[in-house]
Amino acid sequence: MKDTFFKLACRIKSSNVIDKSADFHDLETIERQVIALNAERGQTHEYFVEGVELSALRTWEVTALAERGRISIEQLERYSKTDAYRQHTTSLEESIRRVQVKAC
Image (cartoon, rainbow, N blue to C red; front, side, top):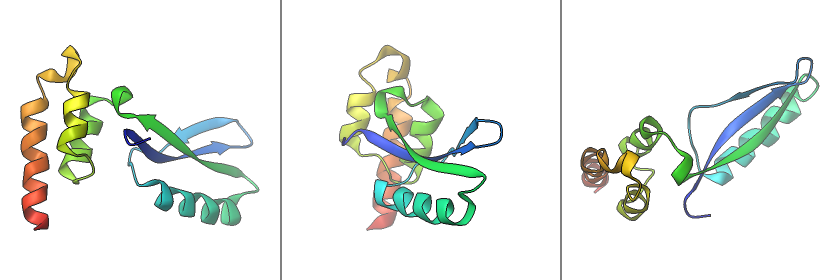
């Protein structure tokens, strides 16, 4: 679960179309949003939590997480073990370190 990221997803009941947020949040935040949105719009939409494993994320998603300080160096190391993402590791690591410095 430590390498799972969460985002809000929505199914439009009339068409069965599913739309997903591009932003990832912690599970607690997303669960609160789901409860509130289903209470407000539950007749026409069904909101739910979608969990996405780190290994399934696209490079731009990992970059966005790194820029927001939402991914650790350890997670990045696990992510970068695949050849497709190894080339991005240095720039992602720099982003993570910049965010960590700003937070201090």
